[in-house]
Length: 137
Image 1 (cartoon, one colour):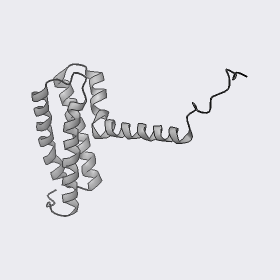
Image 2: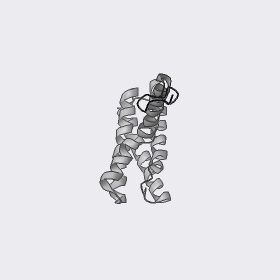
Image 3: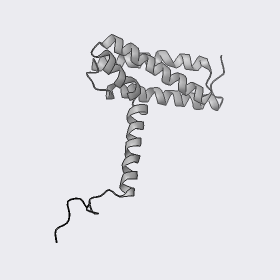
Image 4: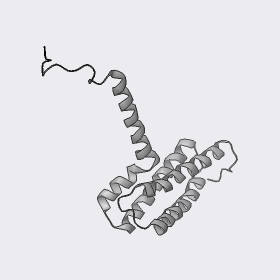
């Protein structure tokens, strides 16, 4: 007897474990793209500013500032070291812009600079917590 069109095939229905794994992969992907690669800054910036490279570079520099301040606040880093990091990160962003040109819808190019910002902010925060860096401000 042929199966009814309205009954679901149990082999094709996603299991609870498959759904949980899919949700976990989605959350991990959003974390990597959104937070680590700076997608929270670059994707809306590219959408709003389009192909205007100077405006987009300035907006992404603001995003790096937000990342630096957030990491400094999370680690309790002295404001002096937070302020010192920003020109270095802005220089890295300008070098990226000089090396690769415009983003052309490719947010991975900003992701490299954002990875460096997270790494630098983390190291400065850890060194600050270990009292290796002097407290200036």
